Image 1 (cartoon, rainbow, N blue to C red):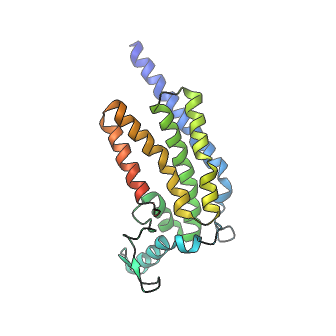
Image 2 (cartoon, rainbow, N blue to C red):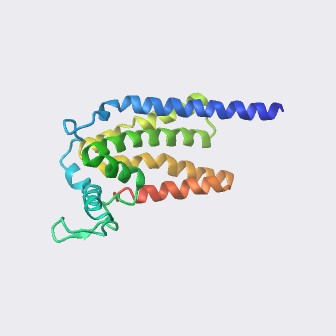
Image 3 (tube, helix red, strand yellow):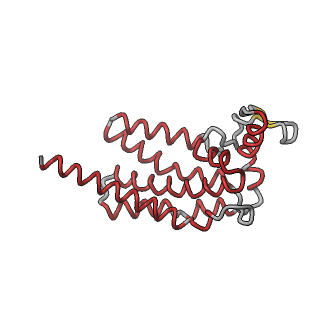
Length: 200
């Protein structure tokens, strides 16, 4: 009975920590949630690098299907198998599909701040940190300047792909320590998302 109560209390503590991380990540990135074309992500490369999702969005609206080929780039290039394409990553592509190139990209950045924060929390959990250590790890990853800096230079995929790194490390360390299925699942899914983030 006491063990069950302790487990329930721990679950509620973890849920509260996750809610705090999500709330702080969204609060920190709240300026990006101004919808409309008046506020755009900056950087010289943004227009080119967001292109795979924008092209897929436009073609899907017209034809109802996702194209395999981007004929609007020079002589054409693969859309899904392109090293800069993020169409296979749902956390990067679905916001662009749902809200368009400008607003969808901003929503994806906020979403990835949350993903990075929760990944930092999970990494702290896997290595055995207490509440303060888990929250510090979450906030350090969610507010990483390397993400903001890359996006500010227009490197959309490179910035967002960093959000999966703590998940990859957490999955790898948990797989080496625990040998259970959720650890392997986290490692495989996070690595796949990183690979399909559209950056090399």
